[in-house]
Length: 189
Image 1 (cartoon, helix red, strand yellow):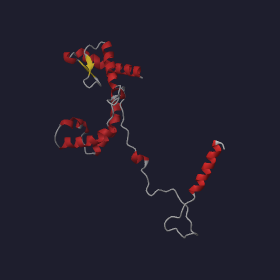
Image 2: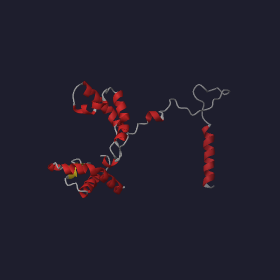
Image 3: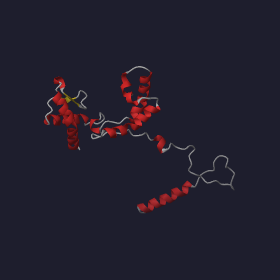
Image 4: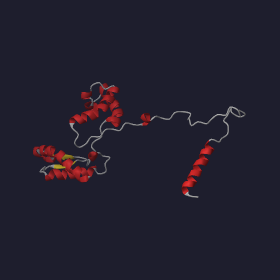
């Protein structure tokens, strides 16, 4: 017997067996009123929307301020829904004390992990190549004339000026960082 014929016979047998079975409770001796089995579960399962956790938005290296504000909209809505009334000073309250600060910290604990935008993947601590990215950006900045720049202590960013507090390095570094980030990101792909 060929494989396709064997599969066809197996499908027919399984279909026939699906209709067989013993009568359920309360149906014994009810020969004239046979019931047809259905495929209904006792309780409905969770819907796709109820079980789906919203995915946090992610910044890109080239995210504009307007785009970032749009990414913050769900986070800000969540804060308001949890009692934060003044969003303009909300993030400043993180290290303050008092009822307003307590409200913000409680709301932020809920909202940040669901809605606050993740950093660009290239700078995300979850990215195993983020430290390599930072080192490559520092190298690029030095090649572009930024004299005092170094990888930050956590290895995920860079800092300008160093002990020299050199304003030229700081301003040139701020100017050249986006360009170096784009170059390094393109080279790492």
